[in-house]
Length: 356
Image (cartoon, rainbow, N blue to C red; front, side):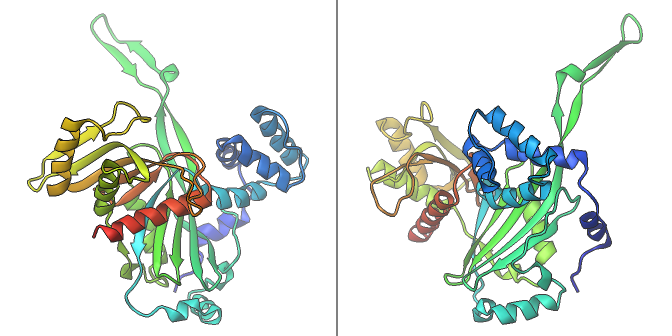
């Protein structure tokens, strides 16, 4: 039986701390100016001025109780899943899934695990120490499950370094670090019409193990959601196909770097002169990369998706992604709109199919 732990029950009942408040506001203020403006407009507050002025207006709104930290959380939970993130594409279960489209069945199913109160509601979780459910949303066509966890890491700060001399020949030097915290969102989405899915994880500091976070989420929902029946989509074919289409002049993206693994495990990588230049176009490089592509496996693809006049392409400017084929993970290193992310994911999935 899945139920709220004593820790999370106490957590939900306790007021937000100053540390939690600062981390949450930091997440809001790290967004681009237009997102902060949207938040202010949502609460009938002035959205004019510099970004610093907008920050001060949010702080003033909190001080005057016009807005609350819970309001900020609700907005972040809507916006951040489409921000800097890492995504795993998923194939749905082969077993029939019709019952998951039935709202009455889903509510009864969740009630067996005491989770029906999460359905189509939002809990304002601040910085829980362990991964906790925040929402389960379903409209019969799409199921989205959101979870939240606090992540801490050490960040180097030379100003905190200290030095102490023990003798003429011995000195103790201490390198200074301070603890940084962030609010990590993990979101699973299941398209109940196409039987496909994906897992979104907020971008974390370099060195974070996204596979471990995915496993945490699996364990959290395993009792009631059949994630063990989903399989991760291999990105190797998409890396090769995007590179190949660009080489023959039919590309919808520009490659900044592509890495292949040979049948015997060696690596061959090509990189363009800059992010605004294509890897393709130099005969000797093209020949080498084509040979690597034909016999190897796509391990990494650094691509910029291009705008076009196609009515189905919502990209009005380039969009940067890194396809990490070795881990079947897609990195969106900059904040994007939901429409842009969904479009690029659909194209990547298409190229995985067309090349498999």
